[in-house]
Image: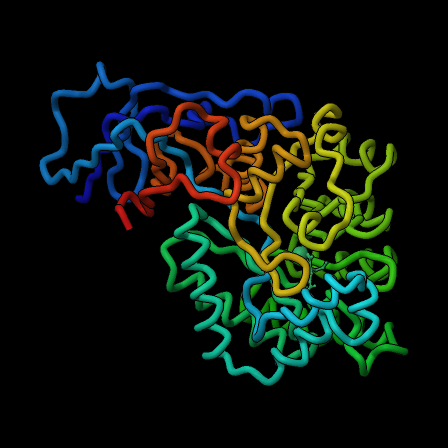
Length: 414
Ligand SMILES: N=CN[C@@H](CCC(=O)O)C(=O)O
Ligand SMILES: [Zn+2]
């Protein structure tokens, strides 16, 4: 039996009741904490915790002790939206953006997703695994302890399967939970430019059965957006995916009011992601559902598009999660500390709301909140320990810097 005792914790953060598995809008203001605390991890799980003056006299024999020296302990970030399997960065597009081209201009000029797809088709599974593993390791060092990864730079049967197999290998070899989303409907490949029905048929009749047969995906995703996949395309794809037990997670309303939120809600999507553009109808459709609004402020920051209306969503009691959207085009960063800072600065989320959105609600957007995302007995001991900080707000306040000193995964200092 392996056991880890962390003592002298300045503030143990996110001690939600065990049965709190998702926070709707206004509930997100509550972030329970225990000051001057200890936590005991046994066999990879959180066994117990409390105030220092309640530290039990009887402790497991083979005990590793760690003195947090006044640092804060958080549940690891749960990053529920990433695209970290890609063949090459796209810094040439970064320079095009500086020169005034928009995300849509670059995509129309053969850049964007199709650019990544061309490069990915030429890369081997091994090369893709190696580069994605480096990114995932970097994310873990920055406090991420659960992640979702999408396909969507394959856009052919072989290459989509190749991406999903890389994700499966990451799942098998990393000590954190990994969920996979099948995103063949990310862009129409050049050869289907004038045959959208043909590509939809390829996804439904050829790709989906193979993805399901190999058990390669947990979710079905589509980029429901003007110039990409329509509401009708999305409706059809989600209907077919449901036959294979794949629930939706949708890219919706990144560039326009696309109808993606409503079609996602209709299909009981676990989450609808982006939502940089919303209106009253979008908010109303989410209000009557359990679908999570996953916001990606580092994407807004990087490609200079509007920031999501987090306050409007939370005031309407909609559950909001935060994720990185790490990808080579619109967000070349998987740093959840920066995401949380941007959420405070640009989405005007209070630190407690942003931290809940990046932990418990992020876990809910991965359907893992029974296992991670808060400090509760029996949950995975995936945590991070910061330097001594003067307050909770100091974490997002010190934007662009990391306060993290120690990572704990499965109850072990890693
Ligand atoms: N919007 C669609 N997909 C990605 C960007 C993909 C890319 O530009 O490569 C996103 O979530 O931002
Ligand atoms: Zn995305």
